[in-house]
Amino acid sequence: MSPEAASSGEPPNVWETARGRMRQLELSTSRMSSRWFFGNAGVLAASLLFLLTAIVLGISVAHMLDYAAKAEHAQTILHEASDLQNAISESASLTRAFTLTRDNKLLRSRAQANKAVWAHMAVLDTLLADDSEGRQLLVQNRRNLARRIALYDTLIVAPNSSSPLAYETERLHLAHLNNTQISALRDRASDDFKRYQNSVTDDMRLSMALALFSGIASPLFGLIGIHLLRRERQSQQARELQLELIHVQRLAIMGETAAMLAHEINQPLTAASNYLGVVRRLLENEGSETSKSVLERVEQQIQRAATIVRKLRRFIEKRETERGLESPDILVEDAITLLGTIDSTIDLTTAIAPDLPLVLVDRVQVQQVLVNLMRNAIEAMQGCAQHKLALSITLSSNKMIEVALADSGPGLPPEVALRLFQPFVSTKIGGMGVGLSICQSIVSQHGGRIWADANPDGGTIFRFTLPAVEARAVAA
Image 1 (cartoon, rainbow, N blue to C red):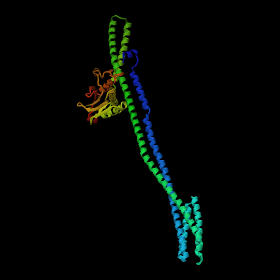
Image 2 (cartoon, helix red, strand yellow):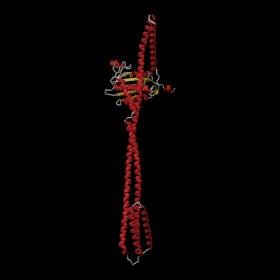
Image 3 (cartoon, rainbow, N blue to C red):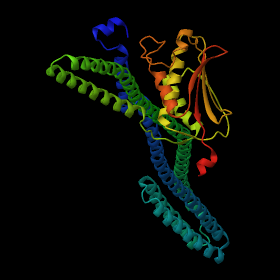
Image 4 (spheres, helix red, strand yellow):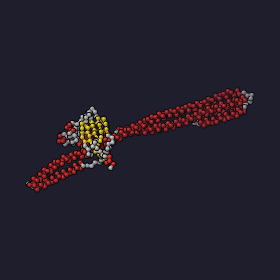
């Protein structure tokens, strides 16, 4: 803090910046980002597309079944018309043969052919029940057929001397009408069969194309939506973890500041008490009882204030933390996740030794140390050509877990390196200079130590140690 700010009593801008950052984090935590909206939109689009495809395929299958039934109906009409025409031709042939030979066997065969003709006619009458134009053709054909059979019956019962040529003109005319009408029925049935068959083919192609499109697009939309929702969830967790760490850091700053204030205030209180003791001795020799009484009260109040300060310092420095057995690689996992939220352009490399023993630590406090060190390294590398950060965890020879964080920044000035972990020492403009002091306090409370070395490749290497827990001690 500058002398001007101290004399004016104005708070440093860093507190206002910190409060603004906290408000932004709280708002971003409570408010969903665009990834949440697009993720839900993708999942909803996939579901709607799948549902729409199922509905369209259901309708298409129903149409295909209907068209297939109609095509089969048209094919049946076509076959019946062909059978009717064959039966009529057979009846006419048997009639002409009988008029020439007068063989009764041919007459019996003709009767069976006529019976088949009327049977096919009845079937067609049923099949064309819903086709007014087809039924009209069938009625005309039945009338002409009845007249044609009647002419043949006349030829059959005519005397041998009578010539069939007298009825030939009308017979040929009726035969032409029968063939024309039956051909019209067959053409109509053939056209209907082709149309319905093409409709089935078109619906099948549409269904296949829609199923192929849905099979590709629906999973794609779903996967994109799920990916965006997972990213949003991870970002939300990272923001919540960052809020928790900032909250813990604020408490630690308050505790560290209170401890330092207690230490600094206790000294003048002790001096004041000593001075009052001297004054009291002087007044015992020469002074009024009133002055002695007032000085005693002042001394009591000073002693009371000193007692309160000592209790506050003892409470802060000897507070108990919630510690548990943690794996070193798990400890750095959330810190690395938070690194992406602070600055995603950092080239981070990690080297974690295998089979590391566990450590008994307060997980949040150790993560706070890691985040503080990484944030300092990131801020130190601003403006540098390279943004490289190397994190390594090893087991030293004295059974201590050593965590090293090396950056590619400009390094530490010599005058700062000597007082690096002292309170209110900072190389940043507007910095409070309590972050590294808090880190040292946390590491010391866990039985380790923290220090900084110059990086041979340029920059600074911060190292801190934590006591390892023996495997047998864990089992016990």
